[in-house]
Length: 270
Ligand SMILES: Nc1ncnc2c1ncn2[C@@H]1O[C@H](COP(=O)(O)OP(=O)(O)OP(=O)(O)O)[C@@H](O)[C@H]1O
Image (cartoon, rainbow, N blue to C red; front, side, top):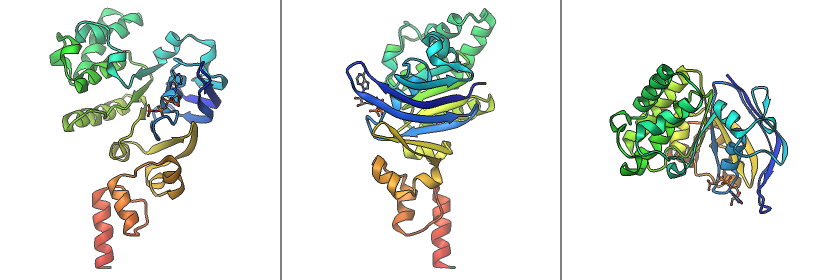
């Protein structure tokens, strides 16, 4: 299992846009991390640096003991799978099963392993019954799960999800919750970019906040959503419970409704 380490990493696009500025961060194997921040903060660029799609213009990115500059994108992406924000940037087969089988086949796994991994990934993502469908006949939210399944089927140590909750209803959110549990059991590292702060508080203990191309906080949810300076600089909207607790002047890093109700009742009947 691979640790990811960014050491004073900056990245400038060829048109001169600096998208990541001096980012230092490490994610131990098996951890779950959410990266949050405004549009344009540099989140997607940061994760593309982690899976070798982009190579730093300054500093170094390590996946385990590999420096990504010394390996091809194809090599790094075998260790760090990346699910694109928009599924339509990733899908290129005419049926779900072929799409999901492509990755593990391409990695050279034997037929049995390809069968086993693709079935596991399709079931976990709720698309097994749609395996013969053309992905483009499925709704956007289901296509997103097709792309998640196609990355999970490669069995990489690290999985990066870019906005997994976008366009998902309760069923999709439940699938994601179940998937995160299963990935944890398998010891996978999961890094998620999201704008959904309820999703963050429910599933991620470690929150990395980016603003203006830089990392401005790397804390637990119960700290970061009560840090006025960070909220101000990142323009993050804290989850409803944290918002309410702050308005009521209740300290203590509350994140869930039962915690908030208990605290309110304690104030009424001390
Ligand atoms: N291919 C590109 N060429 C030039 N500039 C780019 C490119 N991709 C992104 N940028 C710019 O880099 C900066 C960081 O973008 P990035 O997509 O990494 O941010 P983000 O935090 O992921 O935003 P979002 O939440 O909108 O996806 C932005 O100013 C963006 O316009």
